[in-house]
Length: 79
Image 1 (cartoon, helix red, strand yellow):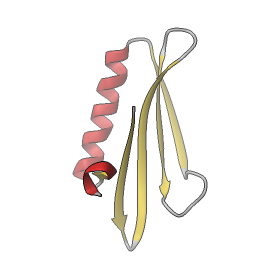
Image 2 (cartoon, rainbow, N blue to C red):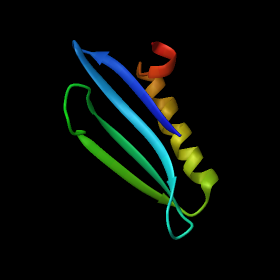
Image 3 (tube, rainbow, N blue to C red):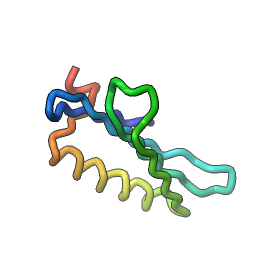
């Protein structure tokens, strides 16, 4: 599942995507991408590895809550 967040700041549309994927070695990878909507490539990509799925979910939820407090909204809910 991929979570897509969007926010308009200074007349620019910004986005965050959050996704947890399993690795080949039974770990879990949290991938966070962010940048401007009109750019072809993301401004940044953060990859964090976790050995336990629930720790990856805790980190995803923590990041999600921080971004929602900053004014980001879930694209599915906002459209």
